Length: 162
Ligand SMILES: [Zn+2]
Image 1 (cartoon, helix red, strand yellow):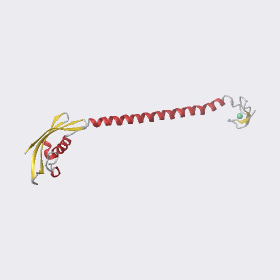
Image 2 (cartoon, protein in one colour; image 1 turned 60 degrees about the vertical axis):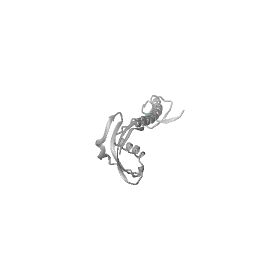
Image 3 (tube, helix red, strand yellow; image 1 turned 90 degrees about the vertical axis):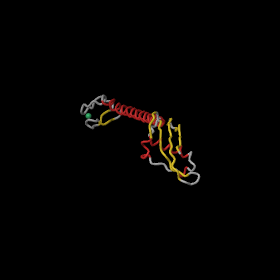
Image 4 (spheres, helix red, strand yellow; image 1 turned 180 degrees about the horizontal axis):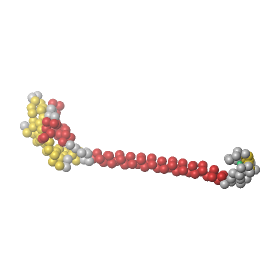
């Protein structure tokens, strides 16, 4: 039989006594509560850790899905007239005698000549100054139809008006 201190009056009492003989404090009824509290805390703590881990995993999965959807978003990228004009310039350069000398007007100068034909299709009418095979700079007008299909760009029609 061991002696414990009464939590109420602090005096030593037998641990098998149902009540404190000094102050009448209920010792037996109190004991299961004292043991039950830490157990409940441990269970709820584990539960919280489990929930937090679950949330973290869900967040990670959502982020992966988000990356996938943003990758899909790139495939349906919105193109504007400037994109089409820049693509047209690269197609025009391929047909020039000296592409390095190509000098295109700024987009704001030809913006009115860039027509949207629908479904990511643009018709551009512009000009380019470049050197011919004799080293003379000449101005060449061109008309070009650019189509954006997914990530790819197609030049449907390229007409030089010399
Ligand atoms: Zn007592």
